Image (cartoon, each protein chain N blue to C red):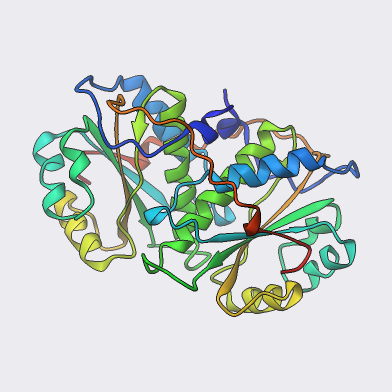
Length: 166
Length: 166
């Protein structure tokens, strides 16, 4: 069973720091994602500064786990030169999912914290890390060595499958 | 190197049919994706009927490869009971990315063909497979045994990485 199936949302972490080579692999995984017209309309803010991390739960109602995380990656979309309007959301989603899978592959735990399209969260996180106008904070991925362990979940539901037509 | 890094967009396929157990694994991978509030707002149309497949290039300008594909999965979003408005796009993107990675894992080739938010493609594909009003065709993933082989691509770009702040 590969990491794609083992991945769970992990919200508790040990204090062990993440190795720089692991951070690089997480970012390489993100950038290995497909994107519309191969535009790669993403940027990544690697946040390890505790003053910044500990401000985040004041700005986002579901980000309390950041207090425990040694690292969070803020995945951002670049809408400054969209060739395929609106598809940046899908591209950044694929990059986010790749980070989650690679984290599992590396023995790390991570969780996808939604930011966009919630306007309040977008505005607050943009300000926190000083994003330019055309760079949109899309998702936040807190990451650390897991301090909780969950078995793979089974979400397979045959009622969601249709053959040839609805 | 895992499939996440090996995955490439494959648009040429052999005529070899895909085993039913592989189709099941592709759908299990899709449904292993995370979703906002674990709402799993997705449905999957598994298209193998050649009459339906061969109609698709008439409805979508970038779907010519479907003519060669033994199978395409139409990933759809269910907006009938959104608890986290707008996040279904991200959930369906994660499911789509998982299908692409699992296809690579199984020795198959696949490509993400964008549908939503292009209104014309959404309308045409909804009609083709008879989707109800609140089910939105999101992405189309043609899949087959690869008849083209591409080395892993390196999209890693340090200019996209920022530390703590922009």
